[in-house]
Amino acid sequence: LSGTTILSAIESVSAFCRSDAFAVTTGQTIKVITFLTLNSGQAPSVVLDEAGVGDKSNTVALVAGLNVATLTATATTNVELKILNSAATNFSTSPIYVFVPS
Image (cartoon, rainbow, N blue to C red):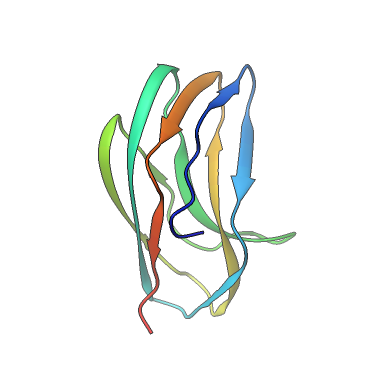
């Protein structure tokens, strides 16, 4: 996912997108860095998610401007970065960088 840019996300209802899967261990911290341009509506949140199982970290709400979100894994498993909103939104991002310490 590192370097992916969301050029335009316009949703009238809740929605989400996911990255490719990567491995984490319990207690590991992942940094997500991006600049969010919020045109209207709700700012999205980010969370580590195990497909078909559920969230495997804390959820961090992004804000307009520069974001450095710290997600802490709650399980040793393969996860995807999920970007989500629960209400109408209209936003874009700069490249999204995900730092997973080795």
